[in-house]
Image 1 (cartoon, rainbow, N blue to C red):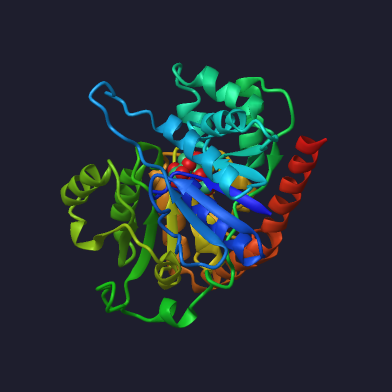
Image 2: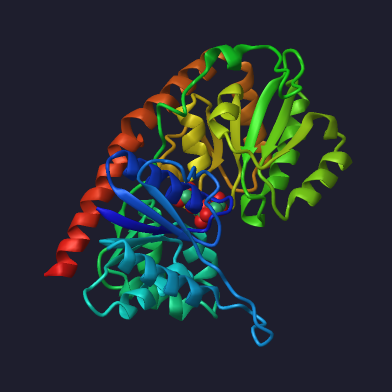
Length: 380
Ligand code: GMT
């Protein structure tokens, strides 16, 4: 098939899923055209079968807010015509699905179907905003196909928007050949590249540092953990809560044990060197970071929220504690980091979950089948 993919190209789960999906599809022989304002961060445009089309957003004195959605729609229609795309697949409802709808209407010679994948905050935050609620609902109703990444998100979208029509759950996935355990790196007592001192346990947090991620809880929890375990915290990513997190680390006198790594391009190299992933989010539609950690045999300590229970079986392949309960999160991390037998069991179960349920090889064919169904219906 020839597929056009649009996503937010910056850091964030939806862009990562879209990019990895495009790469996997290309690997399976499809022709994939990314249409966005920048090259998606994990995308190597030299990959065979992958093409990148930039959306140029011109400024004009009248445009206080340059109309990106319109420039995107024009580019989608142009690329779809020139490359005879079979389908557009947009990730994150606003504004991508509205641009896809416009592109569909601009092409009069045939019907170009489009699929929208809902990732989380497009529904829970943006879609809940009064200014965007009606257009989000409209965009879902007008999509030829809608998928989302957890059962929780499916229910929440139906309940909140009262949308008719089916929403398919296709979970997040991970490339299990790339994301894999590295027992030697994990058991190494120090790590020069990370400037990690001898014997310290390494806790990782990955996010875009938005308030919904509760990064400050990571710092609070580290403070408690350090009362009993010589541990340090690595924070990968960047965003608005970085400054407050740095200040809190200083106030709690743990700044020596907190390392801000910034945006990282090769998470598959970083994660296997860790002993735990801490994901204390207020809301997580699925929790891709937890899945990537599990594939590397790094147990996640997450919050029981949103779609996380689709992934984590508490006490078996990871842990879930209440949102904001930093005492419970610290206690769980202390147990995990001090009980080698527990660590070994959970680490192995985490890897097994990733391999047996969420590996790309299992999930990508679901997208392929879904695309075929949508194209058949659009053609009939
Ligand atoms: O919050 C993020 O990490 C970014 C956000 C996005 O939309 O880019 O991620 C969402 O999509 C990911 C991929 O499908 C999910 O794994 C995350 O759980 C989800 N984040 C939230 O719901 C907060």
